[in-house]
Image: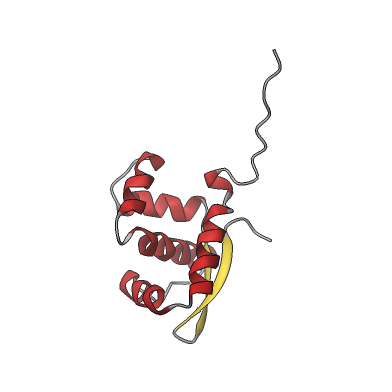
Length: 111
């Protein structure tokens, strides 16, 4: 399984979504941050999750040499009507990303 990767059916089409370095870079750029220090402020906004999903879908599409044919408002409409299971899977997938520290094994330094 790829870190931060899922696929969802949106408006009858399968959409790849990758919550990784490219998606978070796009999200920072979209909201005017030079680094990830502002991500918590972005995610506190009503549109934060929508923008992150949009950036993740766009990044996955571009990485595969394609253009995303959805805009962030369509992603928002999908999110509003998505089954709870899709929403739960999106949140679980975000939490599984390496860029947010998932899978990083922190060992306590011995004295």
